[in-house]
Image (cartoon, rainbow, N blue to C red; front, side, top):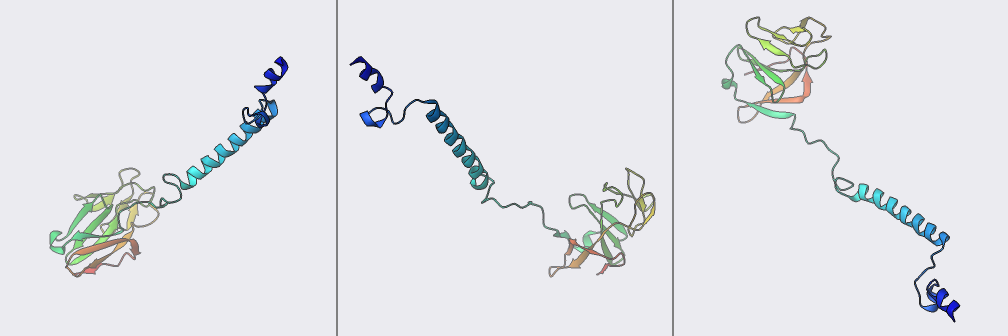
Length: 172
């Protein structure tokens, strides 16, 4: 009788005990299935989880097309820096240009020198005329020029996604 009592605690569903026996094979099988389901769960959480499948894979950047103000807000024969948009608004008489702040050598921020009336790169010494054409330093080409248009409300609108030739300007 004692032998049956001892075996009863280790038997499976035949005699109403626990649902599997504690053998090495069963423990390793259970561990293998657990690892398999944990791996599947990890992959599914990456695909369907937070910032996964249903989250858009886009960069949230400001619009490349933006208003810079009315033409009369810019003094005649001036260069206005819009650091947040990385452009210079150059006004010569009644004509307007939008020129990039980014140096063409290594991408530094160019500054306008009012005394010399030129753009200068403080990092590597590239120099640009007021119209953005390079004349000294390591810069390989002129500063980028962007499209400037007048909208229906009479404001200047710059589109940094559209590069235009150096000669392009808006005459108001």
